[in-house]
Length: 115
Length: 114
Image (cartoon, rainbow over all chains, first blue to last red; front, side):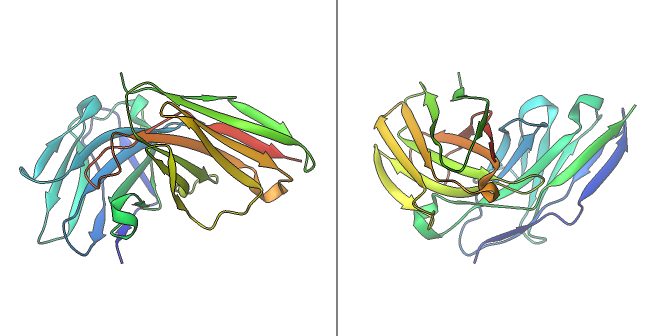
């Protein structure tokens, strides 16, 4: 079965420092991987996705993610964190059941950027 | 424009009430989704509509009844809910029900069942 792990419940980083939010996956077949961000009491906002091609994917708001097949990882990164980046981040992979209509979400990582 | 709108933003209802949640998108997407999200948890898929037909029901209790009147609208009718149904209900849409498609989420409706 498809699964996604986010090993850190909470990540704290100082404003201006680089940030990394970790995600590892276990899939059968091609990994279609997504990152979403959720601000308090809001819906999920799409940041980026990996389908195929370059292992470094650039997304919205200065975020990027590195796909590493050998380590089965898809870590989210940003060179310089902002206080406004503080939110809940979800990594997700498309499930193989129901013809890929489902997402399998990770448990989420809460990012706190300290001023 | 990647906007999905949901109304109302907040809803408080009693266990005997009947209410409806509404979702709308004008991106020409042909797949629409309902998710339920509890606090600090990931969203859980409830229903998927594809080309206005129900394609997935994730064993959701019958007190939740989805409806897709047209390709832009998605409703969730609520009746005889339980307090444990209190959650954030998210609507999403995607171009097609294909694995590589991005799902775009609305802001959600915060439902409280008393």
